[in-house]
Amino acid sequence: MALKLEDVSWRFTDNREWREHFPKWPPVIVSCAITGGIHGKAANPNLPETAEEQADSTYEAYKAGASIVHIHARDPNTGHATNTENPEDFYKVNHLVRERCPDLIINNTGSGLFKAEEEFMTKFLAECNPEVASLDVGMLYMRMRVHSPFDLTNPDENTQKFLKEKNLTVLDEKTLEYEGVDCLGYTKTEEFARAMRASNIKPELEVFNSQSWWFVDNLIRKELIDPPYWCQLVFGQDGACSPPTVMSALDMIGNMPPKSLFSAIGTGPLELPIITLSLIMGGHIRVGLEDNVYYRKGEKAESNAQLVERAVRLIHELNREVATPAQAREMLGLSQTPKQYP
Image (cartoon, rainbow, N blue to C red; front, top):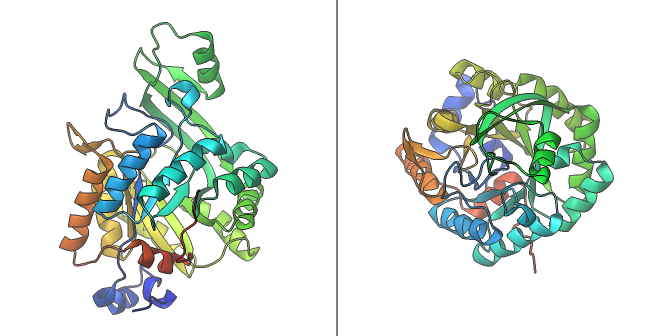
């Protein structure tokens, strides 16, 4: 049965519309963020870093029920310990993933892109050519502690240079702290949206707090993004996100523009309560080792697939179905013919 926009998007916080849609909620799109751009194997040895590891982990998550993979490519010049902004590295991961997962939706993201010039962003995205790409919106004040991918007992000159460039402070021989502001306002989000449109890439709007909707509305008003608007609501990062409470989440969902679909991210121990709330409200979910390296308190996750499998069980317990990649493509307005990476 064809999924129409009115079947998958409504006023999610309106009690009458919620009840009207309740018996026929759409299948759940499960995104898997396989590795992230900050922590590595020091945080969890099962986290995939190399292109081959990422492709293998993606295939396992795909078999478990994921219909979207969220990829941060890693830099082979640093032993895959850090992010890369080289499109060839992303293309290699995309190629290996597509070999294993013929219809999976491929999403590429890289934090360095948000500070790049529009010309570089356009060229980068054209070369990687993902089907979806992250578009952070708003001013993000972030503070986070991460396991260091480097030996900090006696850092060499290149490591010290990297730490300074990335605004990372050494807390001890195993821990780094990042604190900084990323301002992704009107100009930058417009540039990114134009770069995505040039390569027929669907923006995944990463929404961290309520002020971000100003910038989403601006993109809609200027016709730089097309419905359905794919909104990824993020909870759990100190300073950047709205407080991780039910009322804050409902406020975020209630302020989405019409013709939107939403998915929710809960970082760390917030993963389960946040994705459960999203499922109850009629939304979609993201899990994976980028967001949470633990399966339960004190027990590290064995794999991305393990986190997807638990999410799938939860979806079924709440009497919802898991979206196939074809259904996810239909709901998001993507082509049923997956992009290829020969």
